[in-house]
Length: 298
Image 1 (tube, rainbow, N blue to C red):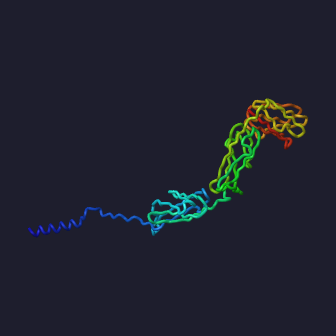
Image 2 (cartoon, helix red, strand yellow):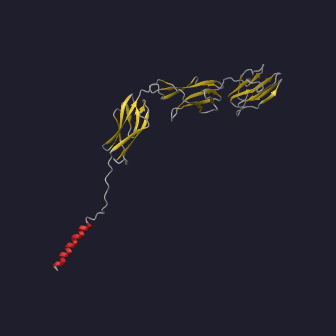
């Protein structure tokens, strides 16, 4: 009996030893250890107010990437500041070191901020006249400024002009503006500058012509239309007085409010009515250079 009891006690100890404390036996791997932080940026040369995104990658000694957000700092915030997300902004001329820290490990990248003198930072858009009467021209201009407010040449950068409403004002590739309707419009310009063009606008007002007559005559002495520019009130009539020498009146460009053309004729007066506000150009195709314009004001 004593022998059996002794055997049972031994077996119990064995079983307890085999079962342990009831844990699953799964071992948690150690956390990866950061051995270096690599810092990079598209450029490290800035001018005041210019920004660039810095990036940081933490790696183990074997090169495995460790997913962990860095803490960003600058050794000289008065020269180049850095945000919590790694956006570096040039502040003043000089040099600074941008540091990204993960745990106790840091990586750095130096940045240089130049004065920006002569380097294009912004553009200034203007017009020779901010208010023009219907049918008249003005010149839009664009110039460059550096970060210090000084002049910066545009050089060979492509300049593209447009308007917010071509029924009020048109603009050529050279910035020549024509008021073709009554109202307010924005003259817009885009200047090529790397991946992101610089843009700007200037407001232009086109006014009606006071006391526009309800009718007018256009005569044709020699190979000209006289007057070359005729003003008439909306709904008014223009009489074209043809001499013995044959001419025609062809509207070019043809617009929504253009009247019908007048085919080649002579020794006759032909009238055309203008129900729409606008600037309507015409020519005699028989005689190159014989051009005229009718301006219709509200």
